[in-house]
Length: 263
Image (tube, rainbow, N blue to C red):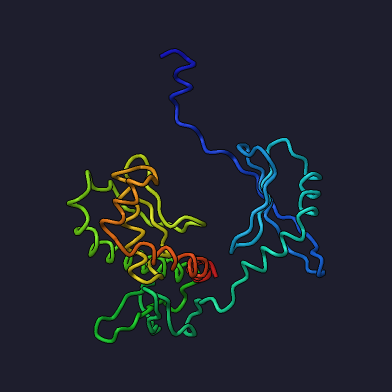
C-alpha cells in the first residue's frame, strides 16, 4: 500500500490534552478554580460551564496570557453561569448515613449491611436497596458497586421495553452501553452501538423509554428530519412531554448521578 494511503487509512490517535487548573477572582471577591485544557483540535479560545465547574479550552498556539485575558473579559458571564449551575440538595453517598437513593423518578430506601464484598441490590421482599460492604471497604469500592447497581437496573428496564420496538426496526442495535454523559442523553454510533446516559435510570421511566425510542429511530433515519420525528411519533406519541421533562429536570438528574458517583 502506498505510504500516503496507508497513513490516511490508519486509525487516528486521540488528541493529547494538556490539563491544569488556574484561578480567577470574581467581582464579588470569590476565587474560583477553572480547569484549563490545551486541545490540539481547538481552533479558538472557549469557555464553558456545567455542573462540574468552569473549563477554559485553548488552541495549541494560544498563550496562557491570552487565556487569562479571555477569562477576565468574561468574568461577569462566568459568574452568571456558575450561579445558574449551582444546585443544592443533591444526593450524597455516605456509608451507614445515606438512607435513600434516587431511582426511576423517586427514592428507594437504603439499608446498610456487612458483607464479604461490595454489592448493592434490590430486596424484592422489602422493596429496599441493600448495600453490603466489607468492614474495610473504601470509597472507590462503594461507588463502583453503586454504578453497577444503576447499570443493572437500567438494563432491566431496557430488557422490558426493547422487545416491543425491535419488530418495527430495519435492524437491531449492535449493542447498548451506558456511560456518564455531560450534555447528551443518548447517541447512535455509525456501527450501530447505542449509547445512553446512566442518569436516565434516575428519571421517570417514561422519559427513559422515550430516549431509548429516540435513539432506536435513528436506525431508520440518521438525521432529525421530519421523517425521523414521524417515526418517533408513531412509536412514542407522548415524546413532547418527556422532552419538556428533561428541559425542566435534566440538569438536576445529571448532577445527582455525578454527585453520587464522585462524591
